[in-house]
Image 1: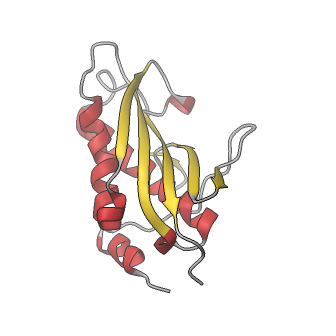
Image 2: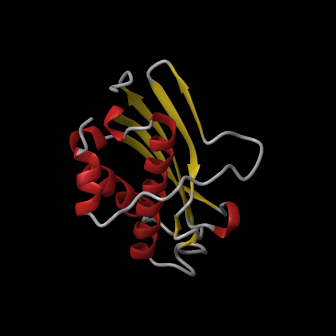
Image 3: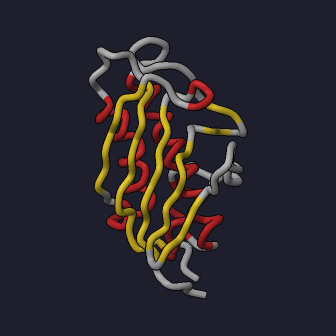
Length: 158
């Protein structure tokens, strides 16, 4: 088993946390065929939300980018739980970045770069993806960002 992704994560100073358990009546991930769907992940770091509030009011764009990065870290934690090995990722197909913001906030795409930049840094070309960045009035637990993902996976490499 190759550990190139784990090595890159270490170089980025990121240790994947234990994946968060579902907070309601849903599952954290579903695989169908060669696609893995990851439910929305919040910016949880060290067991708690690392930021709370709306972009454009309580938080600035840089804080939003960091929240997006940690939501993406939690996406990878769920991928590891689902697949057992991050090397089974063939490609991040698409991510959706939900940004809780004031109505006049217009930098959702910049906030989304926090997740996109992290995924490319961690996964290389496998981390390049399609995406949508969407402004929301609010998100669960007053989180500033939530990210879901669709991932193409390889057959078990063990």
